[in-house]
Image 1 (cartoon, rainbow, N blue to C red):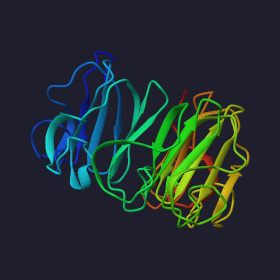
Image 2 (image 1 turned 90 degrees about the horizontal axis):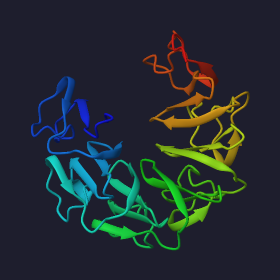
Image 3 (image 1 turned 30 degrees about the vertical axis):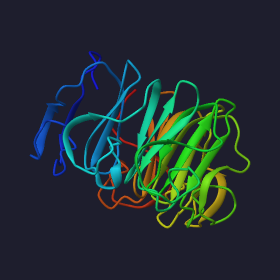
Image 4 (image 1 turned 135 degrees about the vertical axis):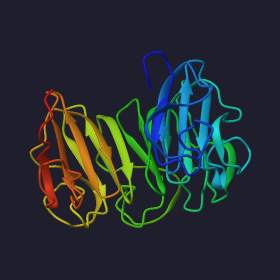
Length: 287
């Protein structure tokens, strides 16, 4: 996303997820067609979603399970508007579901719901947005593979959907069709979700993680699954986080970037391919 409100994309494009009207892979940036005034973007699995300054939501790419929110399951190589949504301030994309936060603090979701990740109390697929039950005062959202997270203005975190590895943080492995509060976590300012795990940053700059940990992606020095949040040791002054399939990245207030988890392809940026159970600083990035 550029300052002029245009969106540019590159990479694989088999479902039209680059939004340039084709299914052609792009090795350099191309502009998303017909889209201006954008203030936020998010990428799901094979689809992309954007919020415009007027509060409308636009999506493109793969549309299996209705993840674009246009009332169909037809793939779209250029942006289409998600039906019935206005006043949106933030969006997130999951594997096959999408979500949005409105300025009134409500959360709206659409797409696949087989694990209850839409939070509407059912497992019914939704081709257009539905409101998450019992959730208000939300300021941010994040999507995992099959679960969803929201942070409220009071700093609490709420989750729903698949919980097979404890990624909801409620101390159980029970699937939840409506939001439950993450145990023992307050003062949160940023959240992220990935495959079977979740991450949060608190206002004191600490990072907390929970869920699957087979590759050390929780960063607590172990490979032990966690049903409730644990603190990532030695990390302070953090401002935001991002979570990929099996590794995690955090940005510090001094501009340094730290990573942990699987490193088979060098995704931790520490000059090795060694798995890391705790944070290492990414090399060559200056503030």
